Image (cartoon, rainbow, N blue to C red; front, side, top):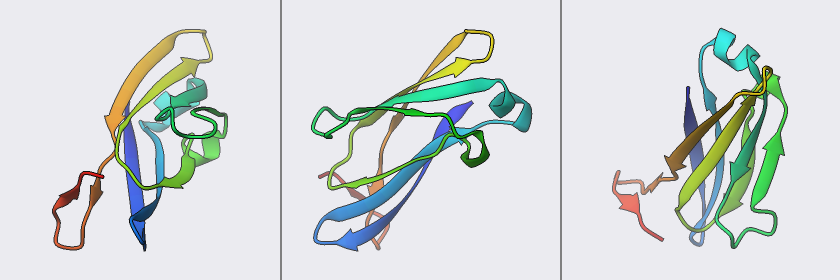
Length: 98
């Protein structure tokens, strides 16, 4: 179980991006909800996603990269902590560090 991501450059140093839980169907079925913690500059840095159909996908936008922390709370009460370094790549494949 890990965090996956995708992104799209919108121009003017602005990116639309999303993260979700990459796990087997059985693994996803065991999750009750996922609590994502974003950079503190976000208006609402802690977000709870309960939508199993989207693999607990969080969609948002911003201009910089940072580490996303997530806690998957399972149906049985167990908690699994994960982290993911958000990364945006320029058209030439080089990472952006903003």
